Amino acid sequence: MSEAKIRLSEITEENWLEVASLSVEDGQKRFVAPAQGILARGYVYRNCGGRVYVIEADGTIVGAALVREFTEEPLGYDLQQFMIDRRYQGRGYGTRALELILDELRREGRYDHVEVCVKKDDETAIRLYLKAGFRDSGYIDKEVTDAVNLICGLNG
Image 1: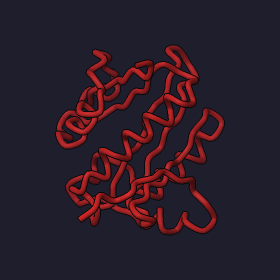
Image 2: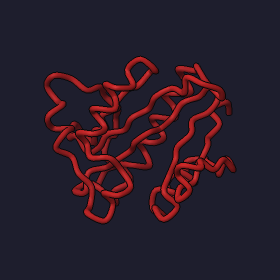
Image 3: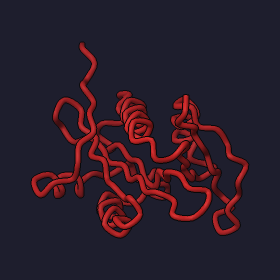
């Protein structure tokens, strides 16, 4: 069996309802916003570079991610949300999609790093981010003490 072609695309008038219907397993719902919430945040964060990436595998929508820009120091990218629909998990789509997002941010080159805040007990997500080159930043948000802040350099 050949590997699926993973690509990122934009939210459009034609695909937003399909993106909005994506969901994760029940046990994952406390870690990631519902797809509708990801779409809404993309709109809310439009003035700080917010964008929703649609994740496709061989033309089928399998996930979504939200990246925005930090507007206060330290400036950088913030990977706010990242999800693969429950029907498509375990196939490597998340790993490949994350690589594509990081490549896109590197090409864009506005900032030298991307950060993501992950619940400490979301072991699957933490493994994914560490595998992609993220490391613990050491920062602890006093309002989200049950999470770890991970950072990935984009300059090599």
